[in-house]
Length: 560
Image 1: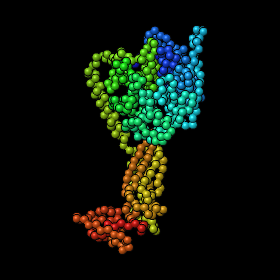
Image 2 (image 1 turned 90 degrees about the vertical axis):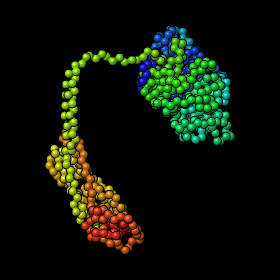
Image 3 (image 1 turned 60 degrees about the vertical axis):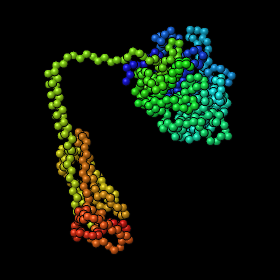
Image 4 (image 1 turned 45 degrees about the horizontal axis):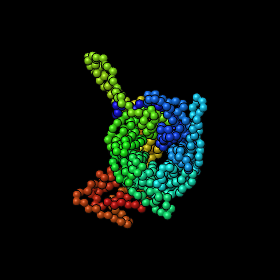
């Protein structure tokens, strides 16, 4: 638990809590080259928004103003992801790429200088659109092919593992990732001109862009791979220099950092469940610090310098996205977005949130002792009442009568005595046996039970199942009851039906067996009267060297 709490300096609620935002619906970038970042949001309800911080001399003067919302447009489809880059030919400006389930639209934000007190006006202009038949999962932007950064291409990954590359307004190529089963995050590494993703074997793999673009190579082989053994929540990259990039992977229980060539730099075992993260670089080239912000399931943000925890602070809520933005009044502030659209700009607070317990008045120990004695008496009386309440209101007695024969069938009468201790409004008696034994009636209903009542049932073998072996002779009686005050209860009793109901005994083995088994033991065997108590009256000999237990169906015999 952290003693500190993040400080809120700017907040707004997008859509008034009626919209839903995904984990890829926010991006922070300087769209106009003014030295201040803009926040671009896209909701699953299809609303695209662009925010810009108004000028403020200090961080204490920052607060939300309606003029901070530069653009708000309702689109026709849900917004899965937004990203920024130079997506238009012969234009150095940055544009917004919006990924929909079946299309990719590139928009430009035009600023019209205002001549009145209302200020500048911002208009969203659609530059071009790419449509596709496969359901999209993610879009990746970057200077694919080793570009200098003057233009960016777009790569759309679909749910079935197909990768489609669009070279600005033109379609590039389409290929399929090998060993693909489930969509995982995919990122572009500029220094290696390659894509990083997770395959079906939970291995982090790296594919070169040139190899994916080569149509002659049917089998796409990764440049390097690393087995993680766990699913990946997110993959991010942080550039130290244009030629040096670090790859950050957030797993379910671990945080990994790789160099651009696939060498594992460090890993951190997490003692909590991560929700989202954001890596970034601090310092110049001589004193570079690799930092990472990880949000835990306890609504806490933890700041790491490589594997060392430098700071932790409590958040207002559990965000689905965390990012970092810079404004003139506040550099490096935290950008938090919840699933319901609560957007906040925060900074790490340095004032501890310490709870001060109120002063307690002096207590009289004699009164405390008397209260303790009284409490013990109440607990004792309560336990006695609980024991009395837990006693069943019904007594159950199940009797098994003798077995009689009616033609080829054998029947056994079962009687159940139900005795209530109080008036019972409804009673349900259920008999349960194991196939092929059946008992009828299986369910009996009673109402307004005030005295002992006897229920009679009949147990026999199922006439339609003459070949199954009877594995158990147990019969379970369940009694469900309810009183007039809606108190529910259940009583059960298990009895064993006579073995002669399902089997017949023979004192001497018959001669029509097709097989036989002889079992020799060192000690005196247990008498058959003890083993088969239900048919002991039919066994006339005291010591039987070879006895037969024969089922009622002649096709299956057992000797012992």
